[in-house]
Amino acid sequence: MVKVEHLRVFVAVAEAGELQQAAAHLGRTPAALSMTLKQLEDELGGSLFENERKGRLTPLGQFALEQSRPVVSLCANAVSEMKHFAMGRSGLVQVAAVPSAAALLLPKALRRLRTLRPDVRVQLRDIDSSAVIKAVLEESVDVGIATVVGNQPDLSVSTLLLDPFVWVCPPGHPLTKLRRNVRWEDIEPDDFIANGLCAGLGVPQLDALVQRANLMLLSTTSLLGFVRAAMGVTLLPALAVPNDGTLVTLPCQSKRYVRRLNLITRAGVTLAPAAIALIDAVKAEAGAWVAPTR
Image (cartoon, rainbow, N blue to C red; front, side):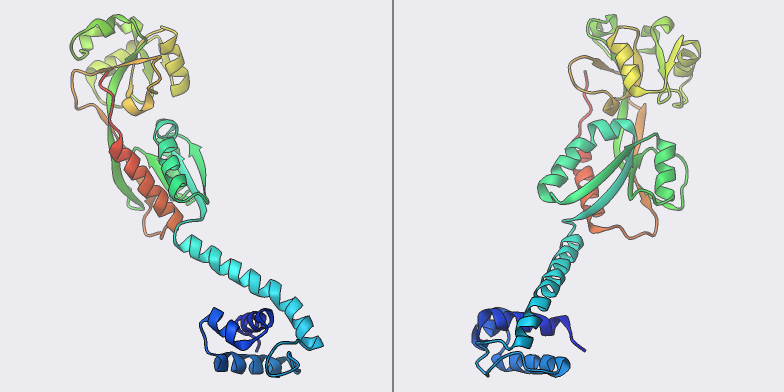
């Protein structure tokens, strides 16, 4: 049986025009190369070189060289790609994340990943937490970033960061004049815009505000647009608020109102090296993230 190694040795000797140089290039002895060439000639049923010095190819040798070069090149490229994949330098990673993490945490993480591993490709979906968990369970994504509530035995869940809730208002709003943390009694019910993220905290004062709110928005993008337009104030995790100067974030009276943002993978599933590299980049950015105080 002809092996790729036989062809690799033949191409190296044919291109070098002598055994010594080819042996030095391949890190083998001339005697070992001669034996390999003899095995190849026996398999092909003819001589590849005109003489023992290997300086001139026979017609069979010329034809064999034309056929062998692309095979050897393809094999070398395949091995190189496999090594890159094993080192986490290539491959596709599919990620699902809640919109705030997708918009404000992942860009920095992916910039960090691209610096170290520019050939890794990433496919990102920004969806709500329940959809992220579903995507990870169905293995349609490799990594999820969301909030996991309760026990999920089929998931591997770790805390990525604790994201404190903050009051969000436009510049110049009366709340910005306070020289202390915002209290529940500071919020006018008619000025409050409810949203899905604050509706499940289980805080009686907040639940009362949600029930009395004239406006509830489920899209964070739309919600922030309404706040920018001075339509009211809202309560959001700090990571969901872009630090672009168009909004003011104010701390709550209690520091215990936090969203736990989790890193999620499927339990018992071996991740590709590129996915592990992405997770490392996300953890590094999460560790460096500091919630704004105002």
